[in-house]
Length: 75
Image 1: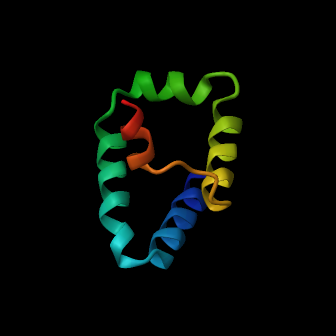
Image 2: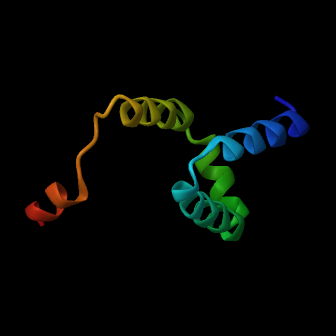
């Protein structure tokens, strides 16, 4: 996918998001922009990262998640 197509897809997704999620998106993008480019490149090139990321997104969509409260109780 080319840069222009990727940017257009990002804009489309953001435009369809509910307002209450926009702060989280902005925060993520700010963090990503501030992150060290070498770190980002290493992460993106790590074997299996994109596969794991896509699987995690599918799990979230399917509701296969654990609440923070449930995790916190074990700590």
